[in-house]
Amino acid sequence: MAQTAPDQDQVLAAEHAPPMEPNAEPISEQPAPSDVAYSVFTVPQKKAIVLSTSLGAVFSPMSTTIYLPALNQIAGDLHVSISKINLTVTTFLILQGLAPMMIAGFSDGAGRRPAYIYCFIVYIAANIGLALQRNYAALLVLRCLQSAGSSGTVALCVGVVADLITSEERGIYVGYTSVPGFMGPVVGPIIGGVIAQYLGWWWIFWFLTIFSAICFVLLVLFLPETCRKVVGDGSIPPPKLNQSLTGIIRERRRIKAGISVDAAQHAAVRKDYRLKFPNPLSTLVIAADKESSLILFCSGLLVAILYATTTGIPYLFGKIYGFDELQLGLVYIPFGAGNLISAFSTGKAIDWNYRRHAKKNGFPLTKNRHQDLTNFPLEKARLEVALPFLYIGNIASIAYGWTLDYRTNLAGPLILLFVFGYGCMAAFQVMQILMVDINPGNAASATAANNLFRCLLGAGSTAVVVPMIDKMGVGWAYTFASLVWIALSPCLWLLMKYGPGWRKDKKERQDRKEKAKAEKAGMEGAKPELSAIQESRVVEEQVQEEKVPATCTPEADGQDKITRYVTPVADPQKVD
Image 1 (cartoon, rainbow, N blue to C red):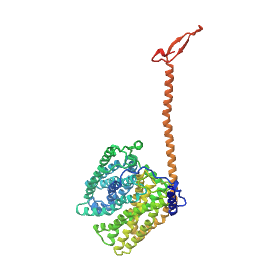
Image 2 (cartoon, rainbow, N blue to C red):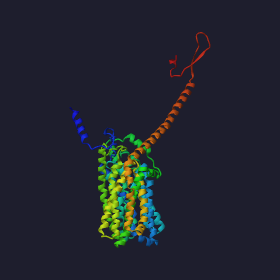
Image 3 (cartoon, rainbow, N blue to C red):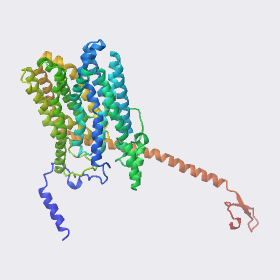
Image 4 (cartoon, rainbow, N blue to C red):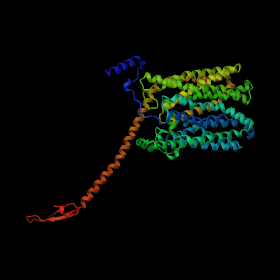
């Protein structure tokens, strides 16, 4: 009778369970989640770590736009044309796309903290130089250096999220990290305009120096190392270079509580720990992947439309509505509000759709546990959320262009900026999460690849948007840009259909490579053992040859003497 109730419960649960997809595996054959916690950090600790790294990531987007209101002032002081000053914006965006390729692979192997230290040192030094220089060539070079230092923090921030959070819960946390990326361009022009007007343009860089130095000190003291190749699930003490004040405190508490370190996990992470020179190869490999390249192109094209919209705001609103610098900065507020609301609401929708597909496909739902997602329809679970927002954002962009073309009431374009900001932020956030999901263990490199496409396409759109508006008109310019994306959107529908198969094939290729590598390592490891055995045999033969004769015994029949060799022993009387 004790077994009857559970069987009945299972039957009832099976009757009322949601229907499984045709290609889904039976529940009994689905991969069970690991019994080991994915991360030893508590939920409040995870939130604190993610929010602190998000603060560190705000400098890259903020540095892009904070000195835009001061371009005319800088051009006058340095006695150069506006075109030359605009070139510093273009080169900044190009370096913003290229620099994370170097730092991302470095952080995935050596840890997040050394990468953060490098980025902030370069960034702070560049800001000091920018505040002191009064030469165009120095401005151009130091802006590139500033971009190289700040842009890596965005990839590092997403890498930290992947270190701490499983795919099931990743939506809401990536939402936190996306806020700085879209709030920076909104807040930057406002701060830059106020500083340039009342203190002078060079104080923009002194502000960034002070702000970044404070953030740098806090991160160095309190941000723990999270890279899974360095600290595993967070329980392995990191090397001294990766250690923080909070890490030392946690380690002492664990020792005091008698919690031992997993020896096998400790040996595994220490075996692969290396401080290597930054190498962009890992990012380029991800960018060349079939599935990743489709996501990167679609998300990059979306961000290009976004940059074309935000870059055109000063030109269009100044020309149509006669706004000054301060009023132009305020125009960004509706766009930023849409970004902010989207960042905190979209994550819940992403996680909800993940749970829905997990139940439909019989995947167990367990928080803070690693799970093999090879047969899970990640592409459907993510892109079903992204696609509606993508179409909403592009339709809003078309409408925004025509409201400006017909010079409607100011409320029209401002409302559409809010809708456009909400849709673009939500879609980009989802595709960023999908990039991390399909590249496990290389989150920072995946984000760097995303950043590469985003910045290069964004740099191109900022360069052509004003000429397009002048030649085509503002309505047709934004309509053309949005229709190009809508025409290419079927790529994401193909990704939902064929993506799981591509991902499974890629994993099988990786498994074969790792197996071949392990077999090769095993053969190489067997060679020293074989040599040792052969050497021991040679030594044994030499010992046998060096044995001395112990006694000579004459035979009773008087024949020749036969010498009998025996091994010398401690007691000669025991020899027969």
